[in-house]
Image 1 (cartoon, helix red, strand yellow):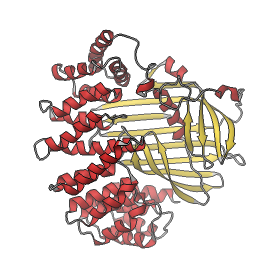
Image 2: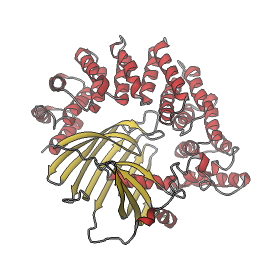
Image 3: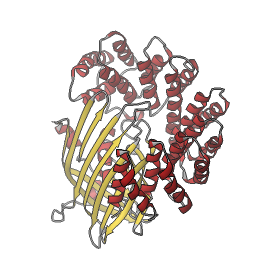
Amino acid sequence: MQMQGTTNNPSTISVQLQGRLDTLTLGTDAGQALVGMRLSSAELMINGAMDAEINRALAAPFRARFAASGLPLAFEFPAEVSQQNRSILENLVRTFQVSLEPGESWVTQESNGSGTYEAAYRRSGPNRFEKSKRRFTATAAGMVSWSEVSSTETFKLDTGRNWITAMDVVESMSSKGQGGPVMKVSNHAVLSLQGDARAAFTAKLWDFTTSAAAVDDRATLKDRIPDMTADQARGEIRATIPQLDAAAQGRLALIHRLRDLLRVDASLPALILDALKTQELGDRTRADLYLALELAGTESAQTALAQVINDSSWSLKDGMRAIVALGGARQPTAESISALWSATQNYAGGERQRMASSAAFALGSIGSTLRKAEDPGYDSLRSDLLSNAHGSDNTATRSDYITALGNTQDPTIAHDVVGWLNDSEPVLRRAAALSLGSLGTDQVASQLVTRFREEDNVYVRGAIAESLQSWTQPTEPAMAMFRQAVRTEVDESTRYNIALVLSENLGKFPANEPVLRDIMRSEPSKRIRQKVAEALAGNK
């Protein structure tokens, strides 16, 4: 597995992982299979550097439960496996995850560490398949929101046993940086079954007591918190900050070091604020210090971030970074939520309007976190977001809260949001259309299609087409409408989204193909031609 990532800092990270994945089926029941796994001979390199201790830790046995389709459902790890290594091992398995269904082609939802995405499959031979990721429909809490994703994945199955014998994954993802960093990531992963390399082990290797909670959860963080006094940790933090500022490589390890040190004592996050206030640090380092506070996640770290948000003496960029960090908190405190609400009020309509908007978006993201954790505070937050979306006198503010409702990723809100598709303000109609793409378009697809037919604003039409890319059961009348619209649409961005709708449903609606071929001949936009060419090539 190889990953290359770049941001607009600019900074680059390169990760390589290779090894042998030992597997043993431990049992089957109710159409599921429990499989023991162990990554032997692991070699993980980050920016060319290798850590022998991490390689040894990655060899811990773990268990994965698979559905009959082949999709991994859950993972179980021994208590001593750190959250970082759990994430690496789970990502390894999910990189090669597949979900097989009857028929020649199908579309399904799958999840990985970044969130939930739509995957399209096509059977290209008796035991050969092609898979492509279309778009992310939900973003995991605290993760980058990927605005574009594309992949070319091919795999073969062993006849009679349904084992993957070979798989090749080429993937690219990018984010637009709305409320977060602009990022581009390229992945390439190869899997090959070593049929002549049977490993000699028994099920006893996987006979461990399950630890369901992640080791990085604050209740079980003892092995991630350095064994030192507050004064010792204070000295380490002061020494690590200039190292981070000077580092061209290995920055991630230093950020994680700061994360762990900040957890030693509640007084330590104040050191980060002091450094941000008094030291001459590069912009990249300042951003990384906010990330360290976010990853630490303690109440005192969140309090430090809230102080930056509430104090207007900090720069706009600092305030924005603090808001983004709080929005990614895994266990947001009441103080954090209060600070974000205050920002939506205190900075509205002024020179710091961007902070007010970003705070609303962050509250929506926190709503997603609370909802998934079944936190009783979610109902109140949901109600307040809806109230502000309906009650504000300012159109831009209402638009922010409608966007925030989409960030909750709560499908039950879709029927509240769909009403704004008929609002007199185009900005609200556009915000509603985009939010419905995050909340689930299947339940409101007919309203989106109707609005598209009637809509005279190009930006709203583009947003509707973008959201309907996640529609899992599109109709022929809707496709016919889009086939006509792509020929007459004057706005390039809207045309791009319509072309994606047609491309992603090419297998279901053969009538889309001649329209897409016409686009290849006459379309002036290079990115539209490229996307259409990829779709036509994959449909052979």
